[in-house]
Image 1: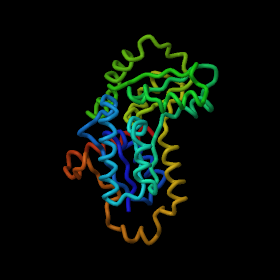
Image 2: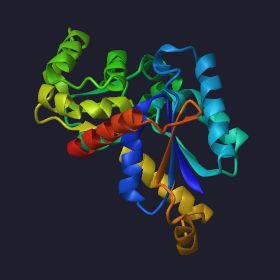
Image 3: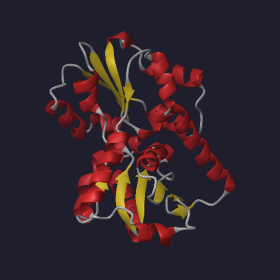
Image 4: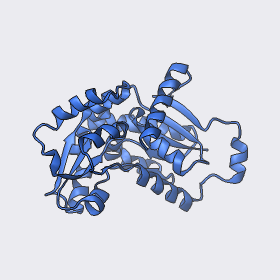
Amino acid sequence: MRIGVFDSGLGGITLLNQALRQMPDEYYLFYADTDHVPYGEKTREQIMRYVSDSARFMMENGCKALVIGCNTATSVGIAHLRKDWPDIPIIGIEPAVKPALTKYRKDGRVLVCATAITINGEKLEHLIERLKGEEVVDKIALPGLVRLAESGHFEKEEVKSYLRGAFAGLDLKAYDCIVLGCTHFNFFKDTFDEMFPGIPVIDGSKAAIAQLHRKMDAAGILITEEEKQAMKGEPKIVWYESGRKVTSPEELAKIDRLRDRWLQLN
């Protein structure tokens, strides 16, 4: 059986790579809902439908656990998924506000970058309130980064031009930590590092996969030696885009380029 990793697009590759780093013996099914990306510009009702349909596909294909590599999908749909499949570990990802406030913040502010639905959602608002960060956390939506990542545009000047416009009016020197609250944004960590020199730029992927491991261990569903033998010869990852298996050399090459980019940055 495989671990299902789901994202609205190809940004979840950053989370899949983290899973492969922490849990290299497992086998994975990656599902990118590329027909509907970006989720951050859809209605909550649309997102809920997309998330439910995608999760059902992965469960029907024998996934033993599910990771939602999309902050927007987590914000809108994770409670419903856990209700529908109460016996399956379902891990969501959320902006790494807690470490930003408790570990990295000194006397300055924290900037959370995400999609509009995540930025304006109750889940993030309640997280910030619970951590008493209302007075020091700024939030900004960066939908353009999703489009750039999906189209494979990582040229620093193009990205910087977009970010300069988005950050106009902000005092960039006021921040002690930058939180990347969308898996697509992790592909641009080098540009964020240049725009915020010496400032930690963090995301929640490592913590999400650590939580996945704990939940699977508690449920007794980590891969066994017998399962490893049975899976020999099977691909480590099977790739799907909106229910269609990815087999074309061009699409697989695009995926490999994104995976390599993440590895270069991490």
